[in-house]
Image (cartoon, rainbow, N blue to C red):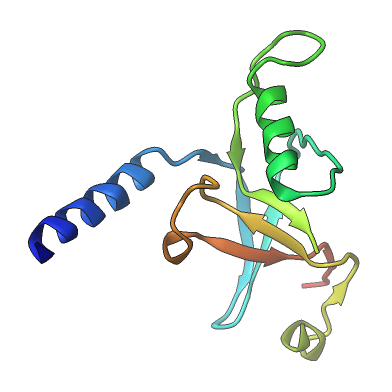
Length: 126
C-alpha cells in the first residue's frame, strides 16, 4: 500500500513540474544567504480586485484565456504576485513598496510543493 502511495505522489510531483509556466526574465543583481536582489525586465501585468482569492484567480484565468476585449489569449508567466524585513535595512537597501507575494505554481499544487517568495520594490546603489 505504501509503495502505491509513493508512486502516486511521485507522479504528481513530476506532473506539476512538467506543467510549470514560463517565468518572467530577470537579472540577479546581488545575492546572499538571506535574500536575492533581482532586476526584472518590463512585462505585462494583469490585476483584479475582489473579495476572495478564488474569485480573483477565476477572473484572471478567464481574461488570459481570451475573455477580454480583443478575444486574444495571453501567455501566463510566473510569478503570480499578490500584495499583502530587517536584513535589507541592515544593508542600507531602501524598500519602496509593501511586500508583494509571488506565487510560481498552479493554485491546486499541494502546499508543501509550492514555491512562494516575498518581493519588494527597492532603491539600491551598488
